[in-house]
Structure formats: C-alpha cells, structure tokens
Image (cartoon, rainbow over all chains, first blue to last red; front, side, top):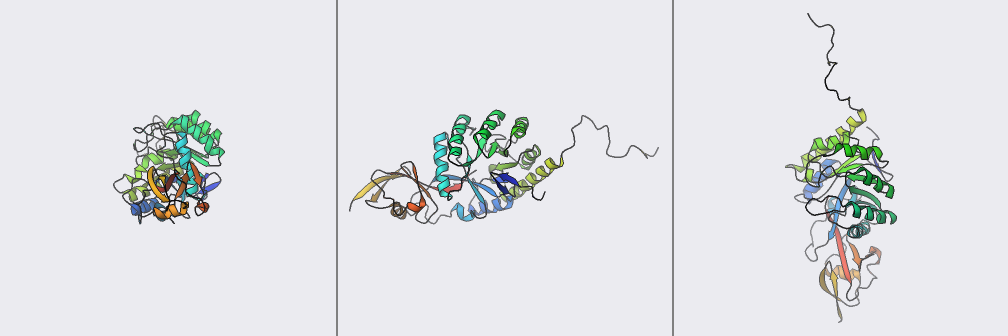
Length: 261
Length: 69
C-alpha cells in the first residue's frame, strides 16, 4: 500500500478520505474530527462575513492551517452556474490563488440533488479560467463523461442525497462511471456509516468525500477514525481483488480427504 | 466631511468619502482577517486594498471560509 496515493491534477495525496467541516459543535470538534480522519483534503464553504458580529470569533482557517491541509472551497448553496462561478472566484482570491475547487450546483432545497445543466455550464467557464474543478454530480455515466471531457480533474457522483446517510443506492451506475473515467472518481454525499465507505472503495472509487456521516454521528471523532479505517480497508480489498460470487460453495474450506469414517 | 453610502453584503453602510478598501475593512473590523472582496461583481486583489478607492454606491461582497461539506 506504500505509494498508493490519490492523484488529483498532478498532486499526490496520502489519504483517500476527504472530509467536510460543516455541522460540528465547535471549532475544537472540527479540528479533532478532521485530524482523526487522516484526511489531507478538507472542504470549506464561502459565506458573507457578519459585519460587526465576528470580532474575536475563531476563524476556521486557524484550526485548519493551509500548510497542513489542502483546503477545497465549495460552491455549496448555489443554485445557478453564475452564483457558483462567482463564489469560486472569491474562493480562489481568499486562498491566495489556489485553483483546486469543488463545484456544486444544486437543483432544489429539499433534495439538494445536483443541477446538471447548470453544473455543466459552470464547469466549462471555470475550466476555461484555469480552475482545477472537482465536480459534484449525478450518478449518470453520460454526464460524468461530459464533465471529464470539459476538463474536470475529478468526478464526484453522489451515492445518495446529501446528508441522507442512505448509502450507495446505485452501485452499478457508479461502476459504469468508474469504468469509463480517466480521472479520479470519488463518491461525494450519501455515506451513512463505515461500511458504505468501504463498499464505495471496493467498487473501485478513488476516494470518498463525506461530512454529515462524521459530524452527525454520536461520537464524531470516533466515527472519523472508523471512516479512515473503512476507506483504507475498502481500498485494500479492491486492490486485493475479491473472490467471485457463487450460488453455493462446491468447494468447502476444509479438506474433503482424511475424514474419519 | 463628506460621507458616502455603499452596500456591504447587502447592508447599507456609511463610509468616509475618499477612503480605500483597507479603510473600509478597518471600519467594519475585518482588517488583517482572511477575507476576499468583490466590488461591483469584480474580484479585488488583496494587494490593492490600500489603493483602491471606495465610491458612492459601490456594492461589496466580503466573504470568509466557514465550515461546509
């Protein structure tokens, strides 16, 4: 497993688990969970500052030093290509010109399902402006391929709806996307517990991005560690190559010979 | 002293005429903090905060990184 890194846009990352930083109790819990997850890439959101109300408030970037983590700003909360492009341009300025971003354009507030027409439009503009775009998308093999052709550096289909914890609802679509892709494919959204992350990795995903599964666990720091282990175990199982599935075992694990009679 | 009215994150703010973006950031307590600034839908590079004048009617967005997935 040494040297088995996640390679995105020419950069190698030691962890295949990417984590979000939302919904934690406080900054200290955020810091502890991110550390326990072993993640190297950490997502952040971009929001208006509260004028006059944020003096002395701890800053997220103080607990997530950019020299230690690769910060991945997202366009969460955007429902149009224009909003997402504007948000990610601000993000690039905020992070000193670093151009790796997570594009996310949503369709409606109830499901947060990816808005694919707007996602495709935003991806074209952002790639043309030199952004390295990791893109949240539907688990649609054709649209995933289109995003790769546009120049996105990672394709990130949902496993199930954001924050639902429903796990991987369509492993066969994910498999088709992975099979067709020449860039990394990461499951983004829908993971509920460690086994979901392991299944994603066993399917051949290059990584998993999650937030709620860790932040909304009863013990987020312990769940972060569980996810780290699950992603690692799933990756090992994928590389090891699982045994074929059979209807019944014609071949028992213990010898057929030497039985006492 | 002449005063101007601008919009910061959708809220009306009265600022001193002839001030720079840096002056505005000091006024709202965000100087030295890690922010990004957009003025009239154009990104303002951090290196120009001290020179770029704030004009009456300017519309600013000032953003920070927060927790998110």
